[in-house]
Amino acid sequence: MPSPEEFSCTCDTGLGWVFGCSRTGASHLRACRPCEDAYAIWSGSAGAQPCIAFAVADGHGDPRHDLSRTGSALAVEAAIGELVAFHRSYAEGNIPHQQFRASFKTDFPRLATRHWRELVGQDAERQILPSPRAPQAHRPTEQIFTRYGTTLLAALVVGDTILLAQIGDGDLLLVRPGGTIEFPLPRDPVFAGNETHSLSSADAHLLWRTATIDRGEGGILLGATDGISDSFAGSESEEFSVFVHSLADRIRTYGTEAVAAAMGGWLDRFSEIASGDDMTLVWACIRPEETLIKSQEPEPDTGASLRAGEGW
Amino acid sequence: MYLRDNGGVFIEDAIPIPDGQVARKQLHFFWLADCSDSMRGKKIATLNQAIREALPEVQKAVAGYPQVDIRMRAIKFSNDASWLVGPDPVPLNEFFWPELETSGLTATAKALRLLAGELSIERMPRRGLPPVCILISDGFCTDPREEYDAAIAELGKIPWGIKAVRLAIAIGDESDYNAPELLKFTNQESVGLLRAHSPEELVAYIKWASVSASVASSRGRSRGASPGDDVSNVTLDSPPQMITSNTDLF
Image (cartoon, rainbow over all chains, first blue to last red; front, side):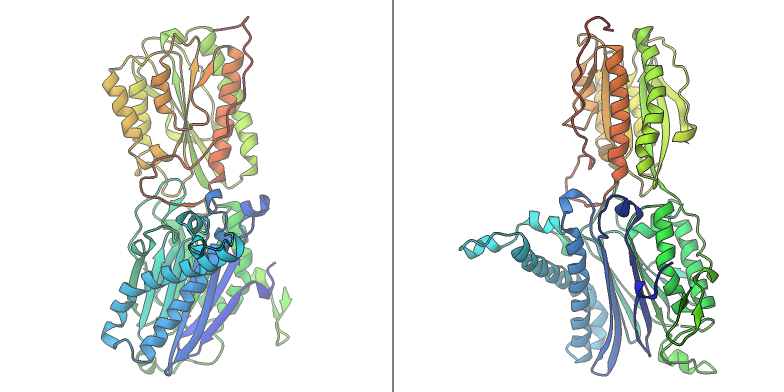
C-alpha cells in the first residue's frame, strides 16, 4: 500500500492543483535498475500573475544512455527553470500579451534544450570529463549528451492559457469537465523498436512539438511517461483513453487527495502486469477561468483543498 | 489504511483501480522454414524436432520478462510461400509446430515478401518489441535473383524490418547452400550466418537463436532515434562454438 509520501503536490488557489507520482518499473526492480523517470511541479506568481508548471521526463534505458537517470532529472530542472523564466518575462511585461503564445512556440524548445545541455555540461565536467589544462577539452561531445538521453514534457498554466511542449514519447492531454479528451500536440512519426526522439539529439530544438490551448472551463491536464500508455491495449491508445476517462471519474468521485494516495499502488500494478516500465504521472486539476467561475452559482470553493464530488 | 493529519482514516482499497484493458508488450516471432525437396529426410525431421524442443526453452528463458507477450507465426516455402501457422499470431504457450513435409523448389524470395507484408507499420503494434525472424534453409533461392534482392531491400526499408532481429541458419555442406544470399537476410554482425553441418548443430543453433533473440528483444529498452540509424537496436552476443562430429553430417 502506498504511503502518503509517495506523491507530491502543489497548488495555486486560483488556478488549481498539481499532483505527481513516479514509480520504479517492475522490470527495473527485477533487474536492480533504478527509476529513470523524473518529474517536477511548481506554482508561484510574478507581477501578481499566478502560474502552475510541471515537467515529466523519461530517461532512455538503452546502455548507450547510461546516465539517462541524471539526464531526466536535469531535463525537468531545465524545463521548470525555463517555464518560470518565461512566465516572469511575460508577467513583467517583457513579452506583449498578443505575442505570448507565439513566443512560447518559437522560444521555449530552443531555450529548454540549451538549458538542459548547459546542465549536462556542468554535470559531465563534475562526473566524467577529465580536467586537463586546455579549457576546450572540457566541452562535452555529442556522445556525452547521448549518455544523458531523455524525453521531456512540459506544461505551463497561466491566465487564460495552457502552454504545452514535448520532445519524444509520452502523453500530454487534457480532459475537459464534460469528459472530452483533447490531445493538443501533433503526433510524432512512428518509430519502431523502442525508439523515440531525444533531448540529446544534436537537432533536438527542431524535434519539439508545442501547442497552446485555451484554459476555458479548465479540466484535468495529464502528463505521463510512455510506460503508462504502453500498459494499455489498442493500437491507437483506445484503452488508454478509457483509463483517462475513468481516472477523471475517480477524481470527481473520491477527490484528488484520495486518488493521489492510491496512484502509486495503481501504477505499480500496471507496471507489474503490463509494460514493466517506469511510470510517472503528473496531473493538474485546472479550475475554470475566472470569468466562467463568476457566471456560476453558487461560486465554487477556492479554498486550499479539493475533495470528493467537487469540481476542479 | 493510514491516518490523515486530521485524524481521519483513509482506506485506499475503497477506490477501485481505474478502468482500461491492460496488455503486455507484444513480441512477434516469425519462423521461415525451407521445405523444398532437398530438405527431405534427416534435415526436415531434425528441423521439426528442434523447433518443438526450442519452444519450451524460449518460454523458460522469457519467464523473467513477464511483461512480454510472445506471439509466434511460421512461414513455409518450397515452390511457393505460405503460412504454416498464421497469418494470425499465436501466443507462445498455444503455439504448436505442425509436421513439415518436403517437396518442390526453394522460393525464399516469396517467403521474405510474405514476411515483409506482416512487418509493415499497419500490421504491427505501434509500441511493440523488435520482432524476431529466423530463416532456416539448405539451398539456393530458386526465385529470380532480382526478386530475392528486392525482397531483402524491402525488409531494409520498413521500420520493423530494420529493427527486427534477423537470423539465418544454413543446413548442410557449404557447397549446397548460398551463404552470401542467406547472409543478406541477417542483421546481426556478431552472429553472421549460423552453419549447421549436423543434426546436433541444427538443434543447438535453432535453440540458441530462438532463445537469445527472444531474450534480447524482450529487454526492450528505449533509446534516442538517430538520423540514418538503419540497424537493429538489439544486439546479440556471439553464438556458441560448435565442435563438429564427422560421423553424423547431413
